[in-house]
Image (cartoon, rainbow, N blue to C red; front, side):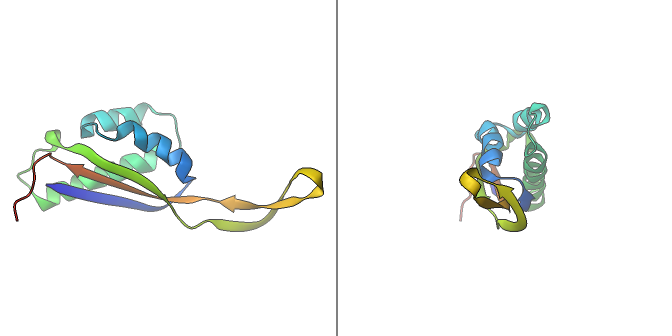
Length: 118
């Protein structure tokens, strides 16, 4: 049985969020939450929230499923919309660059390792 959760429009760059997501991929839910509590990265909070949501979705799908058996089967971060701010940042040789505000979409899949029969 598999369930997923998406956290969309999370503030922060996807490159930095991927560093956090790479730590929990393939771990059990308890191990992943313990790792996220100790990681000192800004993206750890939204990733933990998405992981808890995925577990809640799995419980809603199948109340008989055991939460202790769930594993983070897939986890990835995609680029959300990038906002070009009106502010200017000085660049070398007299140039100027616009500031960017990155956002990410975090997707987490949890499964109990058993295949569903259809």
